[in-house]
Length: 456
Ligand code: NAP
Image (tube, rainbow, N blue to C red; front, side, top):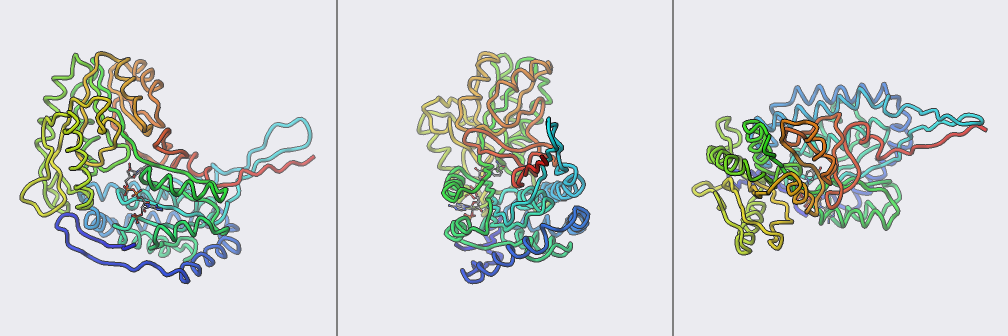
C-alpha cells in the first residue's frame, strides 16, 4: 500500500510515505494497549477535557495551514476546507463539554437494592477513515472515544497522509499521550491483522460498501463490535408547494458541495410534475455557472475530484448510464483544457429501474433527475434504493414534510434543507449505508461497556 500525497488540481506528487513495518506496528499497538491500561482509562473527565479543549483551540489557531493541506491533498475549495476545520474543532469542543454528562452513571428504578449502569471504556479502538473530509471524519471518531477513556489508532485513506499526520500532531501538541492517538500508514492486510488482535477491542469504518463488508466480516469473525458509515444516494424531493428559490439554492449546494464527494450529498433529484420543468431549467442554469480552477484560488467554484482515478470512475458510470438509456441534459464529460481531475456539472435523466445508475452512488457533481406524479410516487422512488443514509424534502407545509420524512427509509431526513452535519446531530444510516451512529450522545455510546452494577 502506498501513501501518496498528490495534488488533484495538477497531478503533482507532493510527498510519499512508507507503510509502517509489522514489527513497528506491534510496538505501536502494545504502546496503545499499555497507555489504555495504565493511564488513559483512569484519567478524569477534567483531565481529558483539558486536552480536548486545547486540541480544539490549536485546530482553530492552525486553521489556515490545516485547510491548505486539505485543498492540496484532495482538492477541496479553500473556503470549504476552512469550514471543515471549524466543524472539526467544534466536534472536539462538543465532546469536551458534554462527554461527562453523556456518560454519567444511570440509576435504575428497581424494587430491591440499587442498580446503576456505568459507562466504561473498551480499550484500543481502530478507525478506518476516508479522504473526503480528512479532519471531520477522524474528529468524529477520535473525540467521543478519547473522551470516553478509550485510546484510538487511525488508518486514514492513502491519499491524505499529510492531513493524517497533521491531525495526529495536533492531538499530541494538545497534551494527549503519544500512544492514546496513533496514526497508522498500513496496508489492508495489516488492518485485518489488527482486527484479529485481542488488544484491539472494536473497529469503526467510514467508506465504501466494499471496504465496510470486508472490515465488518473480519470484526464479526473475532466477535468484535463494528460501526459502519457507508455510501448513500440521498433523495432530494421537491413537492409542488415547495419554496422554489430555497429548493434550488439547497439543490445546488447539496449536489456541488465538496465537488459532490459527500456521502450525504443530494444525489437523486425527485421532483413532482407540476414544478419539474421550472426546477430543472433553473437548476441547470445554476450548475452552468460553476468555474473550474485552483481550489486555493477563492474565485474558483468548481473543484477537481480527489484523484484522476475518481474522475475515471465517474466518467465510466456516466457512460454506462447512457448505454442503458439515460439522457445527458448537461455536462457528462471531463472539463477540457485543465490538467486536473475536473468533471463537468452533469444532469442525467430517463434513468429507469433497469439502468445500473438507478442503484449506484455517483461520487461527484452528477445529478440524477426523476420526474414523478405526486408525493406518494416520490416516496416510493426515494425508498427504491439499496442505500438508506439521508434525504431531503421541500414543502411549505411542515406537517406534510414530517409525514414524508417518516416515510423515507433512511437514518436522517432534512426538511427544507440539504443534509448538514453538526456535532449535536446523530449521523448514520440504514440498509447498505451501514449501522451505528457517530456524533451526538449516540456517537459516544457506541464503544463503551454499559455495565450494570447491582447492590442486592
Ligand atoms: P474506501 O475505498 O472504502 O476507503 C475508505 C477507507 O477504507 C480508506 O482508509 C481505505 O484505505 C480503507 N479500505 C479500503 N479497502 C479496505 C479493506 N479491504 N480493508 C481495510 N480497509 C480498507 O472509500 P472511498 O471510496 O475512498 O470513499 C468514499 C466512500 O465513503 C463513499 O461511498 C462515501 O459515500 C463513503 N462515505 C461515507 C460516509 C458516512 O459517514 N456514511 C462519510 C464519507 C464517505 P485506502 O485509502 O488505503 O484504500
